[in-house]
Length: 210
Image 1 (spheres, rainbow, N blue to C red):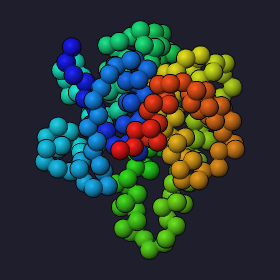
Image 2: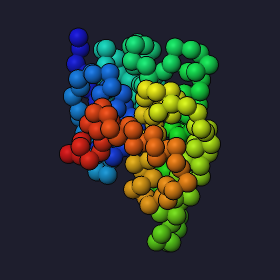
Image 3: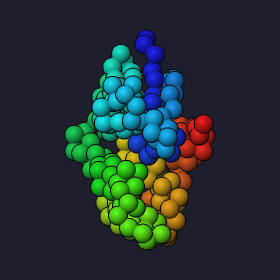
Image 4: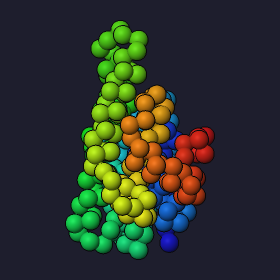
């Protein structure tokens, strides 16, 4: 079996998702840190690997994969026994909708390069915090409604899916930026259950920070 290598930034939500997935699947991997604050993602060597200059990049099964959800869906489809995506097509759509609501609607607006551009356009000292709180709170409110009062310990059912791999890093970011989580009861309950699982614990930024 070829070596599995994760090009990773410890605080990246997208990298965090993939770390959880690899841990849940029991896949041993080597980490190559890519320090975004130092511009390591903009070097010619890294851009040759990932032309977008984003993290994560995963080398697995002899292939080089980019985009966190595309990586997770590849792992789910090549290892269907893992349960990251349900077997039923309608259930898979529901899980994807929850995951995409975070990864495509909340995360991009609050990404490092977006907020850095925002700060170049204003002298307001608290603009970054206001931006983060507004868009994360708005997005989590909609996600809370999507999850609703459905049965199950996790976002969809009684085992973690791709939706939870996206939810946990987003909650981490929400707390980091001081978002009031009081209204998001289902989300905080799910996050607490995930925090009890070794795969999530091992992927936490506090555990992998260089």
